[in-house]
Image 1: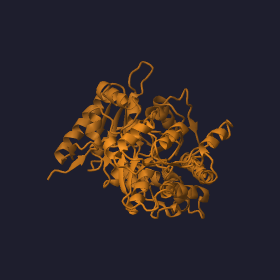
Image 2: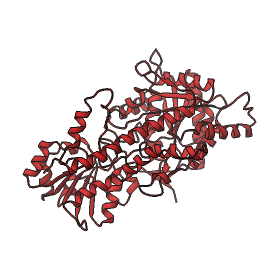
Image 3: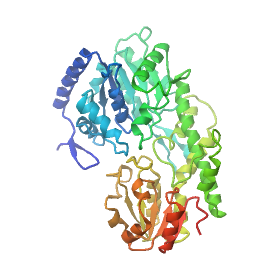
Image 4: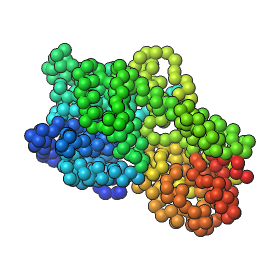
Length: 510
């Protein structure tokens, strides 16, 4: 029986056989030799997820002063049933991610089909052929108890194995650039010892050829400026030794728009790793603060979003005040405080915890329950209540469902025996909640709805006229606005059509 990897669109891609892998190894050698003959350096990107695949395309798109590609990029994805499909999809010139950014399909077409300097593979031997490896392996935090992030930890098993594969294959002159968000201390206390051990097993003298390791984190926003958030944005970096720093600076300068967004070098990889986790902990705490005040605003008849707009006029000090919503999702804010908190004890053997950051995670993780509280103001019993959730991704106009707060919302609604349907124009299949089908026909899904939740601010939802939504529902549903997706004009239209409206932080709705 042939094992296959199934893409989000339902297409099946058989996993490669050993014979096919041998042919692929020979092809990789041939391609690499051809590219070196063209004067290009060879880069491998380890992990072709939401960040890695676009980072690989950005590297391949980099050109010298004459407009010629500087690098050839091998993107590597393990041949697992869950992810192998990305390899043939990328090699067809199609991005494996859904985004509202028109540059995403353009850059894949340009680098894969036109320039032909970006190709994906599942063969690990590719790491023996490259000058630079960009590590974009997914590294998550495990939170074993809902709403108790202080119990969270980081299982680095898969990450360690990925680094071990590099140590067993790379040339000692190869730079390992870790771009995965990792717990502070990872490059020095995890990556470096593994590479040193594997080099020594191979007979490489680590005194004269110490591993070359650097860290630089992306600030990726997989929305309308997906590609630009990688290429045209400030970067922080450091390395474990002077040569690593030098090679990292050269690479980032070649790939990124450093003229407009200069690089920031920190003193150590510990500092660079801490910068990323602290940066996202700040944002997570900012959001958690706004939920407390949103609840207060609801109780005293205030619109928190108008208050927020007034506060944000203080430029330079308060204009970065974030907003409350259904909840916090995505790959960064939900886990980075946990990674740093875990590192304090596990990697540095320090007492205590990052109490403020961890509390913010707890507030944000449980935030979707407040939306359910809003529903209960009108429907105390949720059993058999027909609820439509508009949006299952974690961010507007993208198809990324990782740690989406809609998952928590739907799970708790179903525990209360509500009849929940979900729709999202960017999501083909909800990997994290496979038992819930993501409907594609919005009109059919809405028919008969008793509650409609505007969970994610996709443009499609913001542009729906109230009368059109009511016509699709054929009811007068309770409307829930999770983050100021409806202005007062639309709210009044819904009320004029006989609907009740509730919203996170919208205490002014009478």
